[in-house]
Length: 297
Image 1: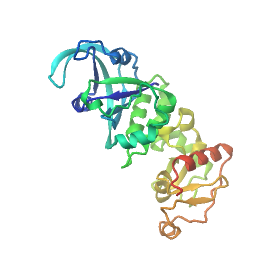
Image 2: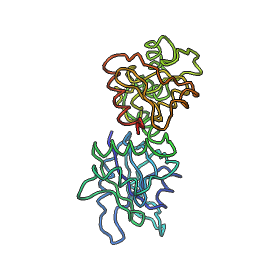
Image 3: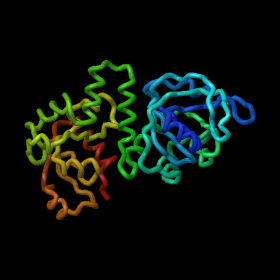
Image 4: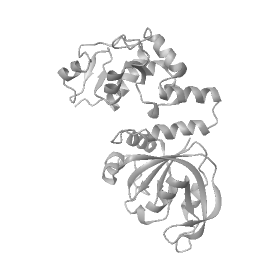
């Protein structure tokens, strides 16, 4: 899987949303060959892209078919132009991440020269830029942390798994793990006597398997690791995934500054609870959660 940064005009995003295609013109308005035309040719099924308009992050997409060349009507004059067409599945964020927030969150991982972040990109033809590992990780986090909470990046990654070349059984296991079902759910419950790790409740409607390191930010191996999940009653589950609670290495419950102890008790969350941590792998996952999800202060 490769990652891509896509700068587009608003009209081109509409084409992306309505028809599921990224169209990169072969030549610019001056007749010069666009560097992004060649770059788009490297996109492959199961790749993930991040869509920006004027520096605002609008959503993510998954490449579903290899690029093809054809003539297409393109904004603003809707003249037919030779373009590289990439068929994708687009997943919009419920609210754009502004260029100011994007700049703040990405500035230390953006390249000093040739940064893809372009506040004026809404006035230019589509441009495509490859994204390295560090920047990709930060972009995934930016989508995962979007307010209001969005499943866009998880949906894009699930689509990437579906169109990728993994064995069908592995695909099914990964998709079910994202939803808290299937064999992962069974193995997690087996670790915790069939119920919630905090309350002991065994009612299957009330208890959900919850990833410690979120599915969208984990590797495939981590997604299927029973030590990277906890079975939690609904209230505990919501508090955990939103960072209102976390667990120390020794299992002691930690409360966010946003969740006073009295409010936790009213919600059925015991501030004195201690989790029976299942070994060093789980300790590492809990540490990741504290560093990246927990709202300590």
